[in-house]
Image (cartoon, rainbow, N blue to C red; front, side, top):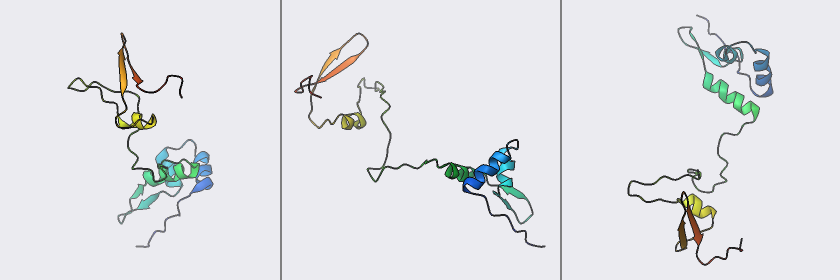
Length: 129
C-alpha cells in the first residue's frame, strides 16, 4: 500500500482567501479543502475542525489569550451585580474595593432608600475626586 502524502494546511491570508473562494461549501468541506484533515491507517479521512478554526482565528489576527502582563492570575471581572447571601448579608467583592482604591479599615455610612442602598465613605469630602 502506497503512503498518501497529505497537503500542507493553509495559513494566514492564503487561508482566508481560500475560505472566501469556497463560500458555498460546508465548514467541514472548507477545512478539508484547506488541508485540515488526516487519513487514518484504514484510509478514512478525518477533518480536524479545531486546527482549522484556530488557524482562521490566527489568520484574522484575533487575540483570544489574555494579555495580563503578568499582573496576578486573571480571575473574574467585576459584573456590578451582587446577590443577598443565605445569611442575609451583601458582600462587596475585592474587585470593587480595589477599583475604588479602598483599604482595610475604610468606613462607610449606609443610607437606605426605597429601592437602593447608598454608601458614603466617611472622612472623604464629597467635592474631592
